[in-house]
Length: 161
Image (cartoon, rainbow, N blue to C red):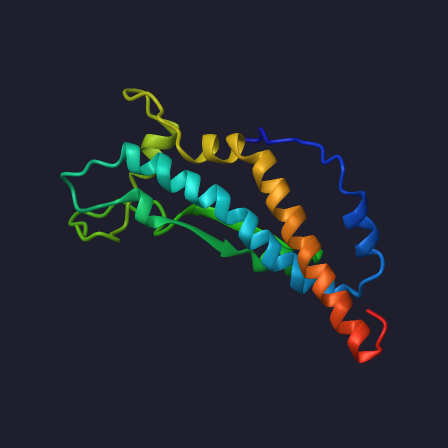
């Protein structure tokens, strides 16, 4: 499970220039909001992929359990902004499961990664891989907007950003 997704960002010189003129606090505040918006692109694609796999005859919905959460552990240890995107409720298979709309769907792992008897039908990984360029574009535009707002606010107050 050590394979990752590598990519290079080209053409964000204006954003990097603005970053150098803003304090760490303003950088983090705007970065978190921009990162959330960018992550929502992957969440929406994962939900769309999961809804194609979900069995409409059961009450459980994998698409309803796809979510994005703030990763406080990464932030506390490294200072980097991070969100986790995944399926809620863990992987515990219960004997008498709840069958409601937002019920736990631990079987998503069996579908995503497959078993020795059932082939894999990934829905999370393709959502991330197919939207890398869109995610980077959304992040760059949203972050640039938030930095522009922060610089304007600081200029109004007469305080250096």
